[in-house]
Image 1: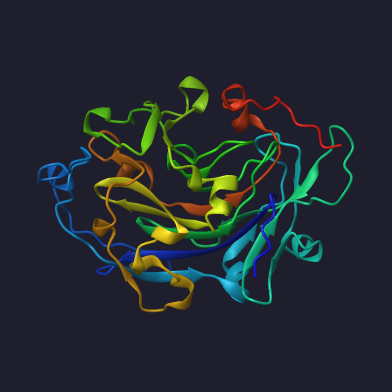
Image 2: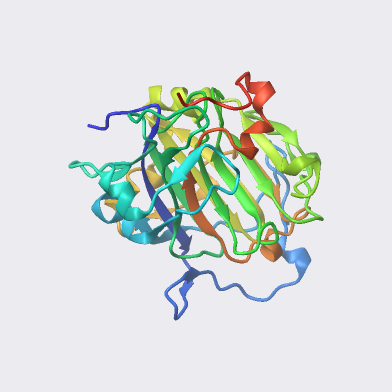
Length: 335
């Protein structure tokens, strides 16, 4: 039985590729696409009731990598440098994180990542935490995060996001992110110049558009963002619902993100950690929570290779942009 903590993640991750995908010699799962004109990469059929254009073809996806249980941490690198966002945090090496029980696997196979919540830290001091990124890089595919419990509360910034080797040229996709006492999930795309959110295509009843310019150099790097209206998509609400699943589909048509509370996870992505030959069909999942169309943001061009990352920390540059809306102090004391 997982013991949820306001400062702990319990999770598993699956990466799926198109059923026509291939594996390169370096072992990286990548998709092999035929060379087509730019116009043929976009939608050729009428839009759905949500206003998001219907994909030209239906694709199924098969598991390429499955991160769960005792072998979960074998596929991840631990970031242990100074926090680039200036948060009150010390990121630990893998050995230190394991020895201090900030990263471990329970006897029942549940993967736990957490912030140190027992050590007394003086005012202005840093608290130990964990940040990891996948050892592999990926180009397109379907990425599924199953969360049983997640951190939340004032001073915490949990996130599941992607980033390339050259930021922001390779793009950053924030799939799960929130700060302090935020009630629902925020999904954001950060890019170089020339990428915008085409709001004319969007009628997402379950999300609110927060910003439209994805350029990291504009508007203090707020990116182009959606806020989910479902309070079970983040923090205390997610934990109360028994967790849920986040899915990000990245293909030639753009980027889409779905969230499903535990009771509504589609059958094709339920319990992926126990499956080796599972296939998934995102076209059957309904309207996504967020969508960035390649027609107004050429994701195939800027997001060439990405890594999967999980992080949590206290205060920092990123959360300051949301401080006043969320009603938390600008800097959080740790004593």
